[in-house]
Length: 127
Ligand SMILES: [Zn+2]
Image (cartoon, rainbow, N blue to C red):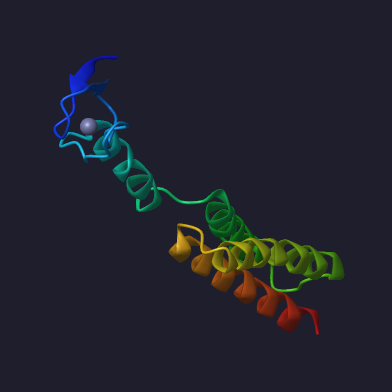
């Protein structure tokens, strides 16, 4: 909390003041603003991050695909219903993730494709 002197009128002002409260002259420093402003944009563009909806879509898509693959040739009605219901989960999360433009888009798309494949497999085996 230091004080400094205005460039314009030489009166004492707070060192973090961007402009002088007495004469309005813009001060040269502004270290606080330079340090604070860039941070949000760094967080927004963090490509390593992803949203849980995308990850959930991917995981449930993989699980339902494994379910569909591991089922023996004859699918009974319960199996078909189970795969259909579970296949809707990655599709639902993928839609949420894509509509809200969340990070991890490739996960959401992969989950969406896997979920649709599981649904098609269940429909094909159920009829
Ligand atoms: Zn001044």
